[in-house]
Every structure is written in C-alpha cells, then in structure tokens.
Length: 231
Length: 231
DNA sequence: CAGTATCCTATCCGATACTG
DNA sequence: CAGTATCGGATAGGATACTG
Image 1 (cartoon, rainbow over the protein chains, first blue to last red):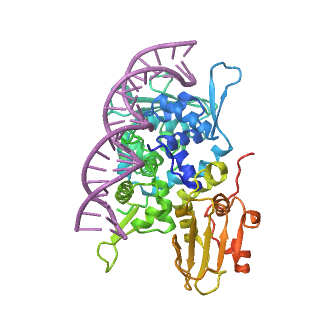
Image 2: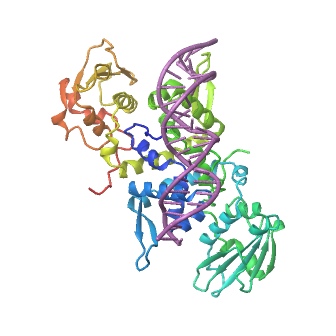
Image 3: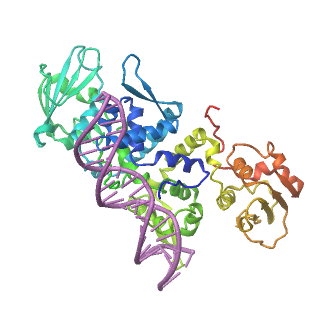
C-alpha cells in the first residue's frame, strides 16, 4: 500500500509524493549543500543503505530533480547534479530546516550525536579566511568516545580546501582541541557559542587560532535561527 | 524499520522525521487552510483512513504542532487547532506547494481528478464579494460522471457562508454550469482560465454571474505560480 | 570508486466494521 | 459526530555481501 500516492490533483500533494519518502529530504540537503558523488552523499547520510540511496537517486532523476552524468575523462565515475527544478527545492529544504531549528527541542536533536557526521559537516562549512594562508591542521579529541571515533583532524590546505581525516595525517598540528561531542555539536548547531562553553573546551597550541575559533568554524546553515520553543 | 528516525542531529532531519510521514503534509495543508473538525479534515483527505487520520493528529499533538480541545458548550465535539509551531509550518507547506505547481507536470496532477475534493476546495476558496448579497445557488454538472458524482450545488448565503451540497438543496438556482471535470479542475488550479475554456463551459441562467465567474470562483492557493517545466 | 543483488521481516497502512 | 478496534498483506527498507 502506501505507495499508490494520494490521488489528489493538488500540487502540494504531488510534491509530497516525491519529496516525502524516507530519506529524500535529507538527501536533498546533501545535494543542495553541494555533494555530487555517490560516496560523498553516503557520508552525509551514513545510516542510509547504499541500495536505498541508489534507488532514491534514480527516483529523483525520474522526477527531473537530479541529473546523473559521467565525469569527463574519468570512466565509471559519476556525478549527481541538481537540475533547475532541483535547485528550486532549496527554499523547501531551507524553510523546513529553519522550522526544525526553531521548534524541535534541542534535547531531541542532541540525542542523535554522531562524530563522523559532525566532522563531515564541519569540514564542509569551515571558513578558511581567518586562518593562515598555509596548510593548517586542527586536531579534535573527544575523550569519551571509543578509540575509532575519538580523534579527528581537519586539514586546511593553503588554497582553502579542507580535508577530514580519522587517522593521523602526519602533519604538524597547529591547534589541539579536546571537548565532548555534545558540546561541540551544540556549538555547531548554534545552540551555544565557543565563548559560553569555554569551560568545556580545552585548547593546546596556537592561542590566537583558538581565540578566533567561532569565526573560522563554519556553523550549521540553520544556526542563525533562534529556538522558539517555550521552556 | 523506517521508524527509528534518521539519527541525525540536523534540525532538518528532525523536522523531516515529523513532517515527512505519509499524509502528514497534506493533512497540514488542511489544518492551515482552516479546517478544525475531524470530519472536515476527512473531507480534505478522503483517501486517508480515519484510523490513520486519528493517529497522525495525535502525533502532531505530541510534536506540539496541533492542539485538541473540546468545543465550549458542546460535549464530545472537538477542535483541532494549530499551535504557534504549527502556524509556523505555513511557509514549509507553501514553498512545497509552489514547487509542485511550478515543476510537476500538469498531466500528472490531472490524472487525479476527484469531483468531491474539487468541489470541497472550491467551497472553501469561493469569493462571495462579486456575488449578490442574498442567497445565491450555483449548480455544477459533470455529465461524464456517474450519477452520484454528477451534480453539485454551491449555496452562498447572504452572509457569505458557502455550503456544498451533493443532493438538490431545493433552492432556486441562479446559474447552471455544465462542463467536464478535467476542465474545471484545470481552471481551479490556474492552468487555464474560464475565458480560454469557454468552448468547454456551458452556462445557463444569470449571464452576468457567468461572465464574472473568474472573479468569484476562488482558485487554488497555488494557482498564481506559473509552470516552469520545459515543454 | 560506484554501485547491485539478495534476503527477510517489521511495520505501516488500507479496508472495514463498530461504538458512545 | 468523532473517533476506535481489529486484521491482514504488501512493501519499504535495513543488513549484508558482492561485483567490475
């Protein structure tokens, strides 16, 4: 069942048939954020199985929202790009995200901590401008987590490209940060700030880089929206 | 499966968990449009089973989107109202509907014709201003449909209240209109106009009322958006 | 890297009937 | 009017392994 659609001519119902299947909106967030490769998309939706991701991408292609193209001069490598119709979904995703930021209780969001997802998001939104124009390495340590998820490195290249490593890249580290995942996530979501959480953040290394963290750490696109839930 | 959520702290993912379950967005459209009673909501989502409607309403209540209250001085009669958070979903529903109107092929929408739904929508959006300040009755005839769905009456009371009848209310009819359901739906959706479809519309009765139909016939809230699909 | 293939079950949901 | 109760089937989608 379920699938036979809503049988309504209303354009909203038609749109909802396409957009409101499981994972679709979150996948669109990734596409809108600029991911184009299958495995990059996977990292943005890690709990989604590859089969389902593949299926959804095909559905979006059928719906005229996504275009799949072989990358020039690379055999067997494909790119997913939003079409005009796909780009026009940005306001939909944005308003829904803003609503979530305004009205979904922070406690609820913070039940879904995930270091790899957070680091992946931080990688994407990091702003290299305030950092030195050379390779810069920042190490994140979450002491409470299991071995394999405890250490992360953001490597900002001279040209501004940002890489995320979960094993020591071997470069000299400019700034070491140790904190708990919940605090770091709350900061990234804009629920609090680096300053307000200074008690829970422990820096070692470049003092100035530490002091300006709030400026180079790119926050969630929805971080600017204030919570409106009554306490 | 499905249900365990997306396990993402992202506010968009949190919002999607609430909003992107089956029927929810369409139900919200009804609530935003102003329906407050269980059976009125049913008419707006006729293909949704009452159990599921009941379940969704409870979920929306839990999510702080809807409030259920007993109507004053009427035992056992309940009202569903949007909370602040619920009202704030209007932009979400609106942008999604606009996207649908822009990008979903008209042919696809027009596969889902439904006279009772159309008439129910027309009832809601009808604009009594251009009509006489007395009871006015307009009869719709869809000759191609089965008996039980062929004849409809919109009764506009002197105070502007609009009633929909599917059996002859017995009042004198001011205007008779005969057309096919597809044409009437396309007009209501803003895909075409009364003027452009004059060939397919057959009026009897008050000439002036017929001539001004485009003004008193309330269109879909999304009718103003132009299609952007390339031909 | 970029997906497919397969299996299997939890659960969603549609249909229908029923209640105060 | 405003829902609840029950039932059963389809299927969506999770888990896992595999391919070129």
